[in-house]
Structures are given as structure tokens and as C-alpha cells.
Length: 119
Image 1 (cartoon, one colour):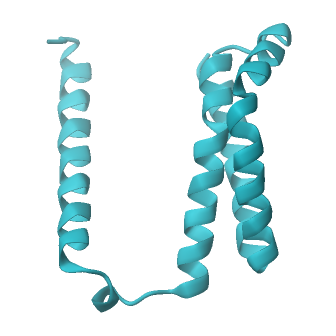
Image 2 (image 1 turned 135 degrees about the vertical axis):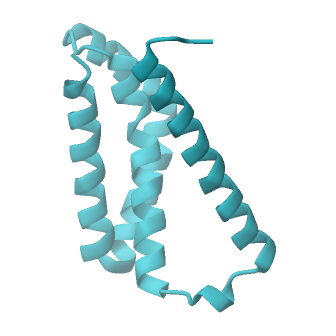
């Protein structure tokens, strides 16, 4: 089942988000430090996850650092709350293009999944 590792990664993200939003500047620093410490230890964590017979252990362990980075990014945005006018126009255009590509690819995958045909 795919739910177990995704649930574990989601819970980890939610805990990191709670620290980022509730911990203020110290919480953000702690999350950055944790991401720096976890990044080189992923190989060891993969071995531990394999020993625990965790299904999709690679997915679960590799989702930890991006979850921390996402929580830090959200914490920084909530803390600073920049206005839309404060962002450079090329950055906004890039965000819109990235979102458009993601939506397009998701729609294509959904249609292909419904038809049960792959390229």
C-alpha cells in the first residue's frame, strides 16, 4: 500500500510546519539545522527503514528533507508576508508557468489513467 509512507511523510511535514509557525525564529533555525543534519544521514536512515521493513522506505526517507525545506519556506512566507508587488515580475511569470505545466501534466496523467493507456 502507498498510504503508509505518504502518511508518515505528511505527519513529519505537519510537525515541522507546526514548529515553523509556532516556534518563530528559533523554530525556523532548528528546522534548518535539522535539514542540514538529516541530509547526509539519509543512507543510514534508509538502512534503518529497511530493517524496520517499512514499505517504500526510499520514498519515506527521501521525503524528510524536502518536507523540512517546505515547512521552512512556508514559515518564512507567513512570518514576512510579502505583498505580490514586492516580487520581481520574472519570478511571478516563472511561478505561473510552473503551475501551468504541473496542471497540464496532471490532467494528461489523469486522462491516461482513466483510459488505462500509457505512452
